[in-house]
Length: 184
Image (tube, rainbow, N blue to C red):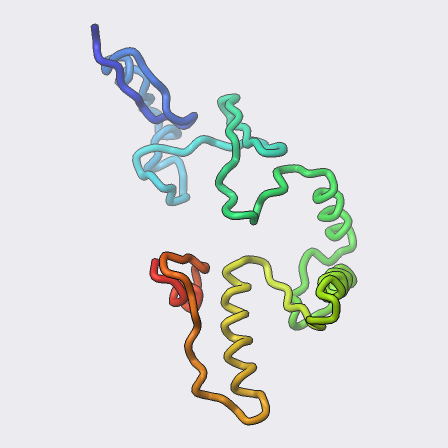
């Protein structure tokens, strides 16, 4: 019985019957060479990852016709799935307003004001202001800076408060401040 082998193709791992079949299946055209066909530095320099052509709900769909359960979004950051009709409608409504994005600390928009009011109201009067950011990393970084600023600016300045508490083995994001909070 001949040995079987696995080979990586642009469509993901493929089981082939023999080493000879594996070698025969490899193309030599420049467009299939991972080192020259993509300008992106992927996680592997010897193989190309699957090409995603569409997505719906929880699934990514590849150029090879595979459907892959998308479990890459992280903890609750992309849990609403792909192409959700209400999300698409909201995005299209905002884009058609002519304002794709306005940096929250410098400008106001009606959707940002509505979101902030709703979030503030949900705290039962415990929080009256909202600082809107685009990612968890930004939220952690902003939280660190806001906490430090609070103690520096409050009446009876407390400039000695410079330490933060974090859990061991924790990950808080990719900025210097967020990385310094964990021990990853």
